[in-house]
Length: 126
Image 1 (cartoon, one colour):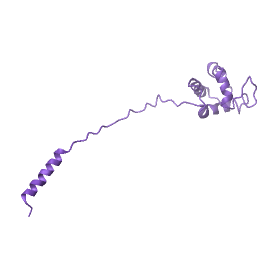
Image 2 (cartoon, helix red, strand yellow):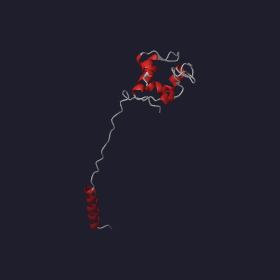
Image 3 (cartoon, rainbow, N blue to C red):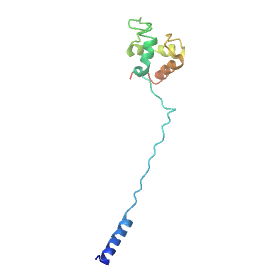
Image 4 (cartoon, rainbow, N blue to C red):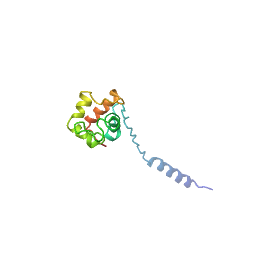
């Protein structure tokens, strides 16, 4: 037979256990949603510009291809294009005057903006 002292001891331990526990407060962290309407993907020569240049200026058009005159410039490499970026010719011809490129693969409404944004961001290669 279980004695009353046992019940009292179990009751006392239960009461102490229940009231001695502290509630741990859990801090709920919520992240602010990313506003994708202002997220900008930075174009680089390798990820966006090279294909535009290859299709419209260099390899496929032949105007600024390998072996082009020093005046025209060789745009088949970043180094060749960089010469005319640094002296301002690319910005003047492509962005300001909208005179170049004359290639049929060039989409003026999108490609020119990609080019302009790339130039404004510092014309990075990678």
